[in-house]
Length: 238
Image 1 (cartoon, rainbow, N blue to C red):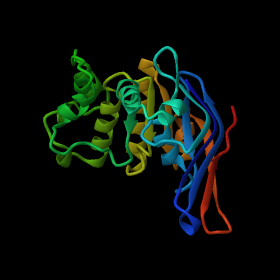
Image 2: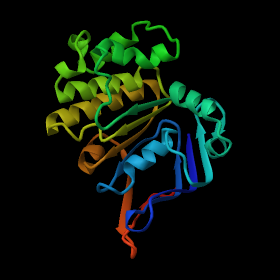
Image 3: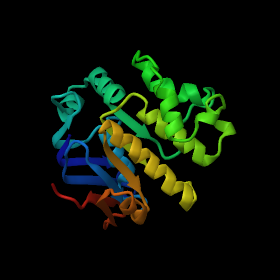
Image 4: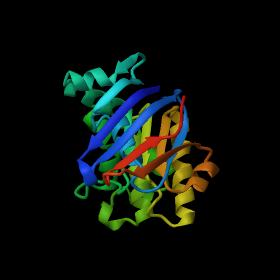
């Protein structure tokens, strides 16, 4: 499903420089992993690379098997094939943003249905089924501002899963929640992903929660360099 080798992303210069190096990352289809590490160690940057919203500066290998065949993402970025990247992103990826990212002018039903509508997919009861599974069925006609933080995060999870993505990414989906709701949201998210066989990559500060949820741990580290810049890397090999 995912194969990265010698991937590098850099931003800024000198004391403002940030560099993320991924020597090797290989995940099979259906894998469930957690990216664990302190703030600033590159968890969100790696998710954005995997979500095809951030281009790598260097990539010896960047392959995603999302369509039954392998897509050479590094080559697509180099050739500027934005339309093909956008198609892969919209059809095969689901992304739960740290702040939820719900559209305030749409009600919950429309927020959840949005990925399917963009792809021209009929509802077929999927919106209601996900809302029931994530316990937000009573909120379908409300707007995000009327929801609690926990409810908004569950709606975000439902939206990310609505079109049946092959790769589910989640950036600190439980960070703003109390321990009880954090446990609940994580379990609900992973249970729904398991039903569709989606590969899951979750960024979290809470390693204990990730372990209780049955996620494999990938640790990320960072250090301050002599010029004041930050170098981050992924510990895990294949």
